[in-house]
Length: 156
Image (cartoon, rainbow, N blue to C red; front, side, top):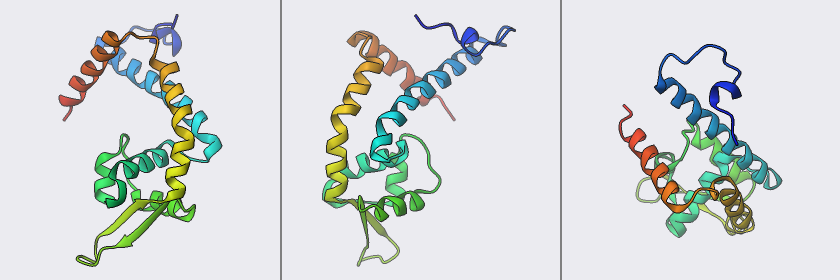
């Protein structure tokens, strides 16, 4: 059974408020989940944000997306999508083309190599998610989803 957050971070004094305790619980949980993602993606030499971009582009299919659209769909904010795409393009996982109708727009598309890499990762990523969160029944998972969505909805 997991320790409470106060014990985990070895905090001796009480939290100033319940919201602080909740905030730290969310951050700690996110960090632990993220660490396992890093471990699963390491053999493919992908960061979590690179993996996210590839998944976004796989979802866009052959249409591809402009940098701004990719940025809007990112799970975690990355201020330098262009550099991220540069690294993926250098590895042959993404291809970019300048649009003829508007030369200012550059569209990124996932390549066959990118699709192959994601396909190889799909099972291990799914197993990771099941191992991390599969201990909760469907009702608890749904409740947690709604609580987290509600929290994001109220953020400025």
